[in-house]
Length: 361
Image (cartoon, rainbow, N blue to C red; front, side, top):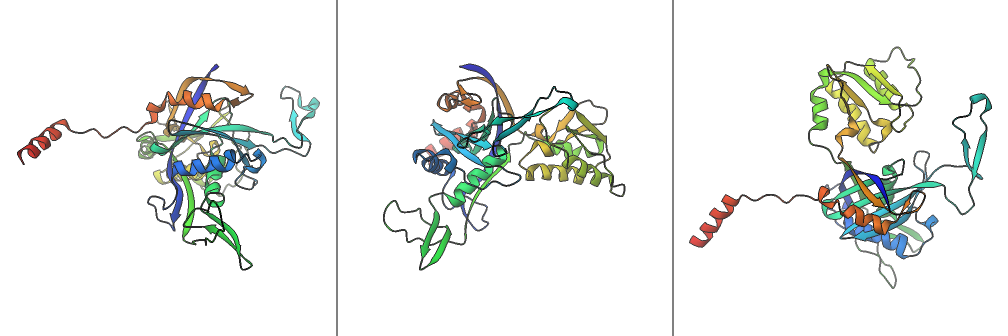
């Protein structure tokens, strides 16, 4: 066991299951717990090879993810995904970072035909709290966009309510009102009013975003961590259009020493635009923006408005970046109280008066 710094990035599960049209209330079918249990049956209990556990096709912006394991403890789940990284037919290209540019030579890490180059991501799912917590250990990125899309597509294409059959030469595909039969003929029909959904929002620290919006007049600079950027050439663009273009087209990186600051005169509406972009893009580092205030050295980042906890925990590593899930979930459970919903407090005086009234009656 190795003592490892663990970051808990907390997200609220706003929707999970099968809904009727656009109804915002509780799902008609499935729940957080049922969805995750069905995922375990489909991906793990079925003994599928890992290559068959992706729920969506890769795109230019989102490579495939595969189920890398799952454990349950005390009603909560730990889901591990393996996130594929792009590579050529023979392997992953690499170059020495310390080589002078004129002498730099590209090399290659060989990838066998049955291997998938990638990295793991870990998600602690707490159904009773309606939370999914991205766990950052040695993994460089959270893999949040992949996880959201993975579960969303599982519900719509692989859950027990999926109808996929032929009827009189016609293909029937969609979500049905009943689960697939365990035996015998499947006579179900898709219900066009049903849709699967999995929506998450970052759990906010109370008032952080509101504070930034309320103090728009005091913001003097916008800040972004970048590696490379291009100068703006569109002189006809308004200031905010230029800033928006600049801040959203630079290459995303993890926090590095290169930091760009731009003086601004910005409105509450324009700040809200940055907040909306950040939320619409799964709280990606690419859309994270910092704000510096008049007369202050502090910087408020959009990401700083999210609940993030840090703890040192004991991790057993089975391989490079691969944690023992069975032991990890038990370690995480030691911190469950941090995220558990507190029960509403009752007024002792009111309870006493209520008791006296009931006795009198």
